[in-house]
Image (cartoon, rainbow, N blue to C red; front, side, top):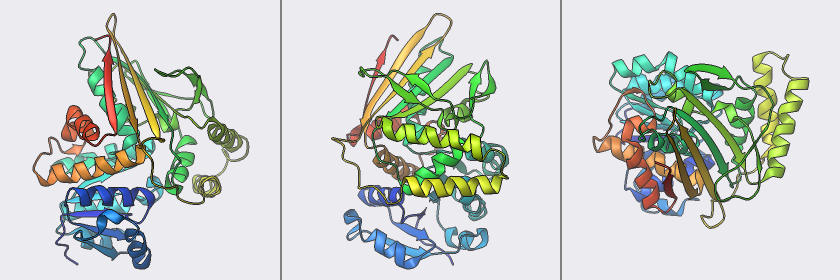
Length: 371
């Protein structure tokens, strides 16, 4: 089935998919809203008021590479929002490559990113296509701050902390529980170093009087992008939520996993984290309120003597993900893609350009101290 729409949004009926659909409509980009259930697609798209009068089409498709390749044929951009990505994502990547589409997704799973980097990056590069996972609040926001920090001469070490204050979606909860039970890495002296399992850390953030408990949260996407980058000697990422009661629940589940599930086969581990994720978050949250759902990202950059601190203060992390997905599509369609193969959002479009796009919509402001 040939497609005459330039963008396919796969997984459109989910929480994040609807936000990307909204932002595509604002940019007047026609798209296919794709997924596995036609009735659900139509029902969920009808809940997005910004789609009224917009040119889009709902298409149900089997979740396998051949059917997806047929749907993607003729498109230029695929935005994949179907997680957990290590469980569901590979057929979408295979189909994007086969159909000649640039691929973007919203993953937070560092093991998925590493698999794409080693398993598909060279093939996408040879085809002249972008393979850009985590084009989303997590991990793009930390990446953008890190790129600003690296503009300061002498900076080679990055220490990042995310603090968010939004409810998590159903798919996000399943993804983060699975990814937090897998090996999680940071960069230490240019080599991967593993975080200990089920271990919390105490962090501070600019403008906050409280201390927060944090977790590596799969290790973050930034170490995946910066591994092998000559500019970066060390890179660590921690994540926290203002809802510390919820955070303690997550840490408790990770401790339970170590006690009860570490010995299980990998497929059974995935079933356990899916089940627990469905119990933690059973219904989708409402659309974020920028006045309520605020976030902070702090990046400390160090060198032998140089130092810099980049602080991003913003709101609505999931809506930011919607902006990043739609901006990626718009920039590809305008011929503004800067790099192909396995690329970060900053490599694909430029860090300051993406920061400006988020700031223009009122979702972000940044400050640089100590440069």
